[in-house]
Length: 112
Image (cartoon, rainbow, N blue to C red; front, side, top):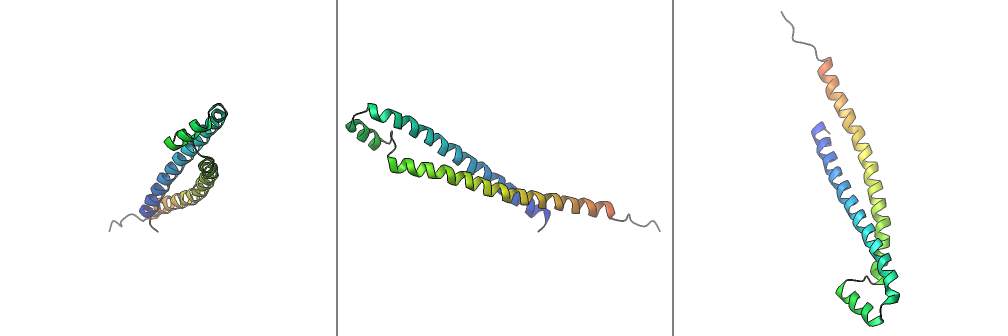
């Protein structure tokens, strides 16, 4: 694989890291909202809870459970992407060394 391919792949990975980090932040925020909503539920009537769930202002317990799992999944996703990114970064460094080595070991044209 040439250096340009490695650079493009590294950029692609960086975009994935950014997206996964955004998804993790979103999931953590929704998790915090669930905690607020859980604390508020006992003060609301069953009718209010049902109405607010219908409006999407309160999460239903199954949705909250899915959010909790998604936080763990996003953390695992990000860790896996970071491991791949470390491998690609090593390959980038090696490609740079090879390119630099080729230029410094090239013989100058002969002056005959």
